[in-house]
Length: 268
Length: 347
Image (cartoon, rainbow over all chains, first blue to last red; front, side, top):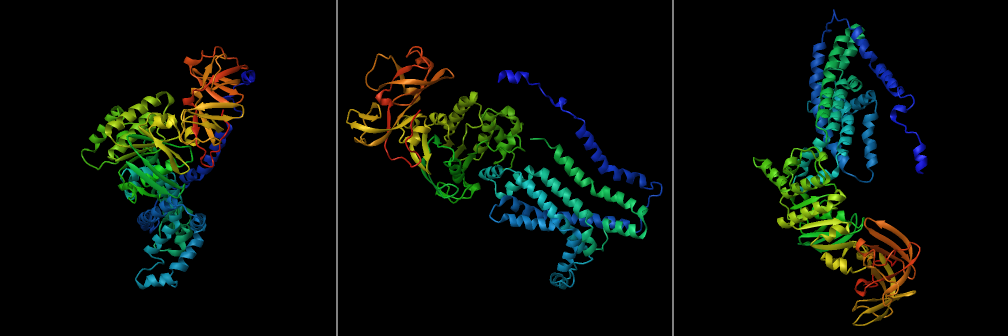
């Protein structure tokens, strides 16, 4: 055996054949992904940059209601994600499948479902209308559409984050005299923060960018996505660039900040 | 402290034992040792005393799981301060506890950068911050380096004795049991024997306990005769004398246990009672000791410490040897054993 080992050449990573291939392929795919963004820089008429009428309102509508939706998504989604991550029982696969249903439903279809459930002629819609809540073409309808668009993504991401926290550490916290609530804040939350940040970022982008559901349920008040669509139809491609830039500026910083912040924490 | 716990799942158990000073509960893997600790801590549904019925967070216990369960996102002192109430004294109190464990200089470190022994002491300091009435340790030796294990454990046990907090440590490592004030053996969901380590190591109550406390030679035998001066047991081609046993009756099927290190090598000419001539079937170094496998009328596993290796002169790896077992070193186990502990050929 020992002679056999001695005669075998030592193969280090440097000797791997075609070591240049993976980085080259990676770079090519990255370029393919980013090329449209670079094109936007050149397509924008920087000398003649001006908003179309109503763009400002669309920006404030999007920002305000997306923040509200994000808060609602976190409030509703966190307990559900925590529950899905912590409770194990027979038939849970069915629950998982049900959770995937809204996630896999195309936004346009989801919009139709919402209007047939919350619309003015649907039972729930007419019931709420009786109390003055109009869930069609109204701010509440807009928020509702965004919540439906973002919540499934948030729950899936957050649940994975909670599942990554060793249950033993949560149990230890209990044995050290903390209540389940304190344990959640002091152990589960900090230990799942990377995944939670991803969930929040994802929810923010989903809510802000929601188009399909919003188009059906809440065409008004117009947020950025619908306004982009309207500008494109009414004026043309050149009219959408200013708003598109704002869209990026509004959508990207929160996820970017969350992502970088959670990565810069001391590694343990 | 008397502990009495009953649980159905995941393992059915009805355990009654006394915890005094540093008490070790010994059991094979899968016997439910960790399960029992979790039940006492309130992490599994179970009924019993003390603390039965209290929610986990109200039980005055300190629980150290295997690997110690330190919070990776908190520094050493923050881990220790975790159970302390917020206040001006929180930091000082945590630092005092760390200093007591000899870790004052490591307080700013994250657990990942500490050694196994240091982590254990941080976890212990954290458990003590809770002011527990009982400490539960799950396999306290599993994450320690062999080289420093004994030293760390001796310090740990000395500290516990000073604090006068009863400790229940569960392990499959008989070595830890040798350092305990008291020990018990868990098998088949119940305590099969408890007492001082000296009692259990010298007189294991049955085969299961004997195997756990390090007996390698266990084989079936029949009682040939029994009197107040001793018991004779025999098997095919051999006969051994043991100390008197009041329960032994002629014709009774029993099991015989002999420790590897209590088999002596004799001069071939010596002969006499309790001496057997056996063939050497295997021979290997075990550190400074020598482990022998012998075949013949009995198959024996023998461990010769360095001091005794000259007793039999130079050992011929293919020759035969005369061995002697003093009657007080030949243990007898009564026939009633649990079903899964059928007598097996030793060696």
